[in-house]
Length: 306
Image (cartoon, rainbow, N blue to C red; front, side, top):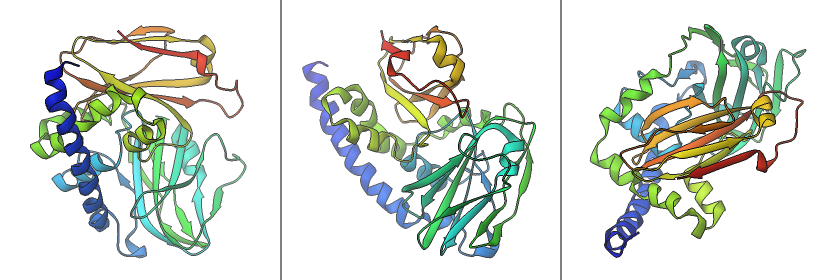
């Protein structure tokens, strides 16, 4: 980084970070718009173009998470629980080869626990979780989904509060993400301007801080690699064969403002991404395929920016 870059990049990134914290707090305070106020009206909401039809909902999402572009994502909440929450896992098992349900507190989205195709028994129809009294949001992710998927029924303290819901799920169901960048505004630039430099200089910052800021609501079962790519740079992957045998490797590329640009699975041991003509961010998600497999070894993954 040149002296002239330091003059504007560091102060602007600092202001952007402060703005993002304030906006995140405001969005959390106003988060009632995305959750039902009545247990009688709860239903799964598919993350899709319709979900982001309102600009404020898009802004809310961009303050909360980094897009998972490789899964069908749905949310439901807030669910009021006194003791237990139960999920019909038969729906998930028949809908996708791999799936996770993450339980978050509402409205601040702190991760509490999760269940998945890797942790549940296929012999049981309902999976129950013991929770402290409170309100919770469920985040569902379906990987390798079927042509038709069913979102599961949910019970709170033994009473069904969310009915099962079936939708058609074509292979290109997530293509709406390509269009989100067309809605970029100055507020999105201000919100995430700091992120590029956060990742660009992550080796000089506390790693827990970088991860917590960049991945505020990660899937507990997924391993993440992330960073910044400057103009003209590419990512070069060298992956062990055992990794590809036992794990799915997903590559996602985002604009500096954190809008999705491209995404795809990586299935070969050596892979080089295309050269970009703008500063970008990347996330690599490594997701376990099977419940019984080789333990993950960090040396299996070599990702270099060149």
